[in-house]
Length: 225
Image (cartoon, rainbow, N blue to C red; front, side, top):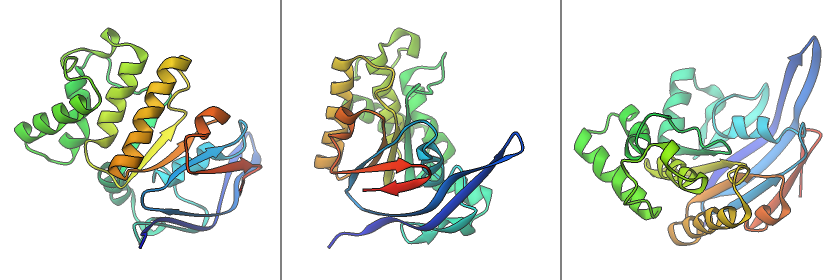
């Protein structure tokens, strides 16, 4: 029996930009089961980035409900939301977002530092995750010493080192060439199939979205498909 990881009901979000009200989300309903691999597509301005921010507990809706692992996150304060982000959600971004003058190992350890994990255990977990990503020989390298694909693997290792319930990937292949993009997508496929990691992927590329089990489209703040 599958377990519902994400449930959104009637989610609305409006921003004020230059005195104009922008309706970014217009009544989003979404259910994601544990182990799903979902791609969300949409043009710039369609609302997919706003949806990602709410899914990642970086923002909350103006109205409607969002339950993550059965918990209504719209009722939580900023500290509680930060705790959920560190404990239950892994993030991977287009621009990698690694600390520049910091080793791959220290980058991957960072979420464990915030989680209060003891130093030796942090080292062991971060090293094991880098080895899983094929970077066991690159643990001491800084981002500038790594290729784009290797940097994204470090970012993936960092996102997964806390064993989160949910991996959010925002255009994870956007800065990579086609060969390297394929390698990163193979990693995501393997994480989903072998480890059962739940993945929500934001992309504008049909080929990338084709790796997901479900494909949804954002259009004018509404979710279709």
